[in-house]
Length: 46
Image 1 (spheres, rainbow, N blue to C red):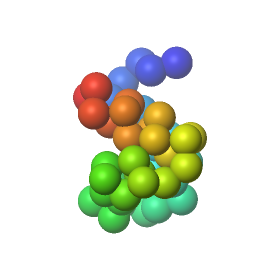
Image 2 (tube, rainbow, N blue to C red):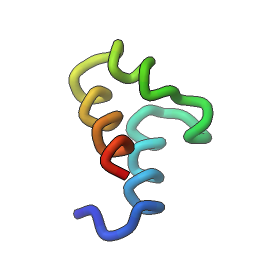
Image 3 (cartoon, rainbow, N blue to C red):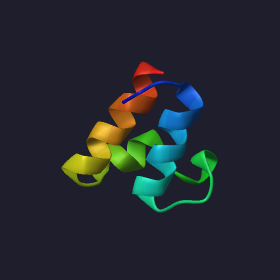
C-alpha cells in the first residue's frame, strides 16, 4: 500500500483531516487515538 513517501504522507493528512503536514504534529498524534498513533508511526518510519 505504501508505494511512495508522498503518497503515504498524503493519506496521513487525509486521515488526520488536516490540509498540511506541518499543521499536524507527531506528538499530538501520539496523544490522539490509536488510529492517529499508527499514522504518526508511518511518518516516523519515513
